[in-house]
Amino acid sequence: MENKKRLKLAKEVLSDPRNPKEEVQALQDTIYAIGGKWKLPIINSICNGNKRFREIERSIPGITTRMLSRELREMEANLIIKRTVTDTIPVVVEYSPTEYCYTFGDIILEMIKWGKEHRERIKKDLSSEL
Image (tube, rainbow, N blue to C red):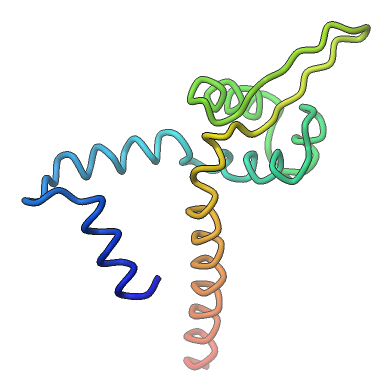
């Protein structure tokens, strides 16, 4: 993010005078809602069109059935995803992102961008040491 945009965003988000307790609480709330090893990969999977439990599970290497189930329940409680049950035979359960979920799409894109840049920086640093 360029410096002008960062300063504008900081002015919009941060109180004057600064309130560190409020800022830490906001960070903790964010981490609670989308943090951990699995939530962002689950969101990514659902946003990429995987709607059924097994589709989501197969798209995320290493996640267990129990963990996926737990994370989906938490994400539903935090209004990030919506669970829809269709009363057919057999019953069909599908997950979809909510409009609220899309509100942090820019954050996820910035995290992906930062992660790619970080990986390149580390590779470059390691190769210069050799």
